[in-house]
Amino acid sequence: MSEKSNVKPITEQSIREAALLLREAKLVSFPTETVYGLGADATNDVAVAKIFEAKGRPSFNPLIVHVPSIEIAKSLVKFNDTALKIAAAFWPGPLTMVLPRRDNCPISRLASAGLDTLAVRIPSTASARRLLEETERPVAAPSANPSGQISPTSAQHVAQGLGSKVALILDGGDCAVGVESTVISTTGGVITILRPGGVTDEDLAPYSQHPVQFAGEDSSITSPGMLLSHYAPDCPVRLMATDKKEGEAFVGFGPGTAEFETTNLSASADLREATARLFSLMHDLNKNQYKAIAFAPIPNSGLGVAINDRLKRAAAPRG
Ligand code: TXA
Ligand code: MG
Image (cartoon, rainbow, N blue to C red; front, side, top):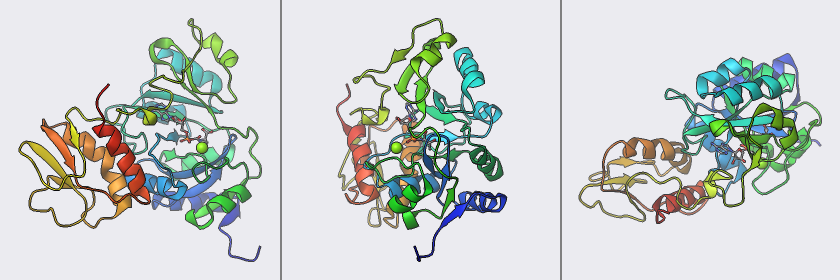
């Protein structure tokens, strides 16, 4: 291939470059033992928004946050005894745990899709941990493929699928595991497999007195993003609003509603900015007791499709 390539072999220098790019809110693809990740600074809403933009995700699924050590994981989420035992046994490795966010958790609300829990893992690939240490920020990373396509297990897969949408692709050869990590929750000491992966129910069984469960098709925790009413604030949500009714909060998009809006997703009608603000804005508005939250229309293209998907869920009848 003659075109200029953003693929670089893993060296101490390319890892340092990648860490700098991540700190500047750019996207970097890096190998883990499972698949190649599409990484962004997990503390930065705009950087995380770029992940959804690059993948062309139709909706904002909660992402896995990668950290280099259990100490750092403990600073983000609350571990129970079962989770501590599992961390000691399986980390670093292809296992992700969904745990409650700490009150002061600095991770982007967009990364955890507005949920009060966060998925965390320590990858076993040494260069990935080295990158996480050098970046000094937790890194949100789904698989580095366009939405709906096959997960990448080589740098070439990433380059073919995402190419110029990533600032840098670190090439560490083929991934050893080749499928994504096993995702579990440990609420109440019960291990529930939310996404099967290389670590099996049999591997996990010794770490709880309760039998290991699999989240069923209709489980509320299988894929929280897919539940119709899930991202709902306490009060009703009104969509396609062009005015503000009494007692409502009005959320504008673009110019034109400044006289009566409570806040605006993006005054310049920038969908990336709107995505970055969406969940933290809903959390903030939810602290006040509005009669309803009214959202101005959002264009239904690019990231707007995902924003509208989430807003539709927030406005859906509560089950
Ligand atoms: O192997 C892997 O895990 C790869 C590599 C790059 O590390 N990463 C990956 O990330 O697959 P991602 O973000 O695509 O995986 C997200 C999975 C989804 O199944 C999602 O539903 C679940 O984790 N998840 C994330 N946060 C969650 C939460 N708060 N509650 C329940 N499930 C959550
Ligand atoms: Mg994926």
